Image (cartoon, rainbow, N blue to C red; front, side, top):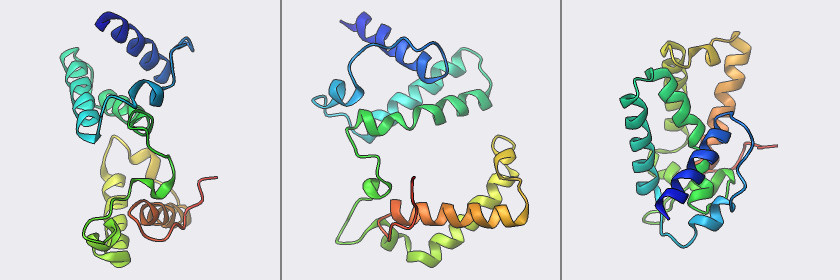
Length: 158
């Protein structure tokens, strides 16, 4: 059973990372719905995957790229909706955005995050744009995160 799971995971991940389209197994939510997997388990899987890649001598930038490629699978493995606001968790009657300090704090964090991304050699090529494009990207980041954190959904995924 374990060998069959490893073989299916290998085929699925190879396809996910750009290899040949040969996965013919069940849909991920169907496989995982009864297993009780949560974010902790998925994070542990990603950490183990990263350690395996490090052990294989792969460069940090490649490991980061692989982990980013695997992250969208989280919604399917955890049987979650992929809607913008679906990840927001209410605690004590407050959405994450409220606990975070509201819109103004989110805007400040988006500005700081964007600035950090322009300095990070692993991702800066995605963010080094003309000033008008930078403003547009920052606004879209804010709009997306606002909805994802339980505030008003302003970002259209279409």
